[in-house]
Image (cartoon, rainbow, N blue to C red; front, side, top):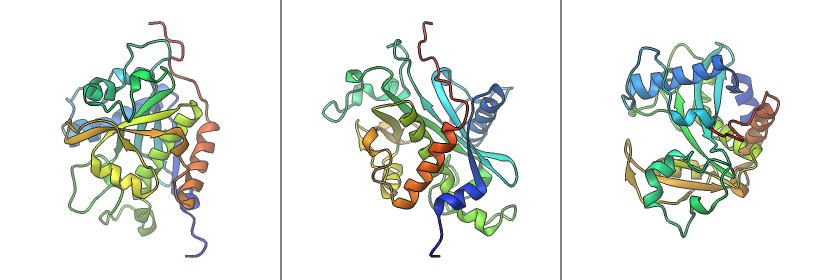
Amino acid sequence: MKNYSIANNFDRYFLIQLANTRALKEEVFKIRYGVYSYELGWETGNQQQMETDIFDNYAYHCLIKHRRTGTYAGCIRLIVPPANRSDFLLPCENHCLHYAWPEVIDSTELPRGSFGEISRLAVLSSFRRRLRERRKPFVINSFESNTIFTEDEHRNFPNIAIGLYLASLSLADICDHQGTFVMMEPRLNRCLSRIGLQFQQASDLIEHHGKRAMFHLARENFKSNLKPELQELYELIHAELLAQQFVLPLKNASA
């Protein structure tokens, strides 16, 4: 299709929304509970049926909304440690710092407040029916048929996770970060590399819900290596986020 646009097609079906109210953050925590606690069993259950942790106190949260049904299909967060609180660590600093490769990147040498970490990507199971792979929190490639959605909507399901990743990088760019970290499996890194998000491995592999490592993406690579159609999607998402009420979390935290 000569005039096909990933950005326009994405915008037709989905909306990226900053979770900047208590109600929207609860939608985030409910999605995470459904995926990480109920479905995958990676986190313990609770009566509130919301999955949270200490990093939520200094993080931005994004939701992706399915326009036709009004359903929040997935979420992601960018953890932003306050510049004046060296004790507010990233998850990768908690888990991977002893295994980090200082010749690649050393987070202890970066100014606090100049970097963050992408984490807690989660997509509802109804939006990620993946062939032969049930127990994953998101999908980037194939999916199975589901009669609730149209064929064209199904074709856009893999773009949910891509859109959420681009949203987190847009947030890092808005925060004027030098770069961002993520803990992920090498397999996911290869998938992201194919679309132009070329994270660099920065630690040994550790066991954390599978073999994972710390990866880093410098700011100059947030969008520069994306294919043109995905650069267009990045710009769309970036503009959507800038248009929303944007408050820096704990920018000058003192407690």
